[in-house]
Length: 88
Image (tube, rainbow, N blue to C red; front, side, top):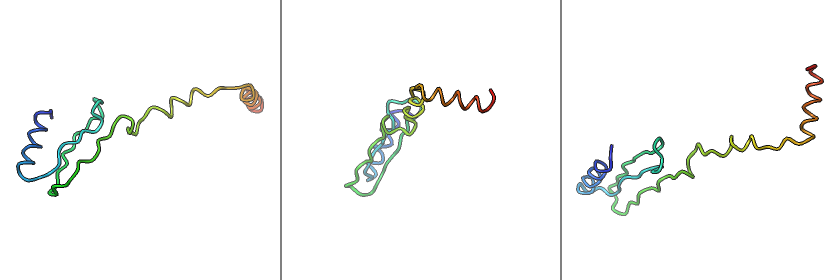
């Protein structure tokens, strides 16, 4: 739930002989932040890398750039011809 509880769980696991810790994905995000408790019996275990905002699957790059296409003269003429054929 909070940082104090997470550190309490991690220290209790370390005292019990586990290796690992807590990984926080998207630490700067309020909605996408997730906490994972990664434990292993192997002492040489390394925690996995946390995801950052650049790795986020819903990155705002595709839809936002679609509207920036320049509508040149050829595109306008093709659209006019298309609508004339439809009878509009």
